[in-house]
Image (cartoon, rainbow, N blue to C red; front, side, top):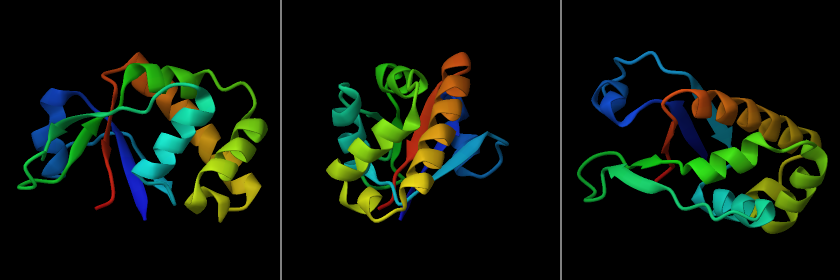
Length: 127
């Protein structure tokens, strides 16, 4: 199970879904929507992505990751305490070794910063 994040704008979605867009991508291994909700709780900001495609089930679900959530991730100063707290709040993340969770948060932090500097981040969650 993993969620996939892409740095992409809403106008890029057709090309992204057709795999015709060369977008930056980050696979969040072991992370689904429940784990992102738990991370939001740890960071003190609600994870509330907005559906931009596929709400009716006819197409893949694509979510726009909220700017406040990305800003909270980008602002993580030290991954270890956040990683430990996230493990305590998310079952699938708890199954990962702490260094792996720290590395994942580091990748998410860098990706969030890049997304904030560009068109933002869309998410394709696991079904």
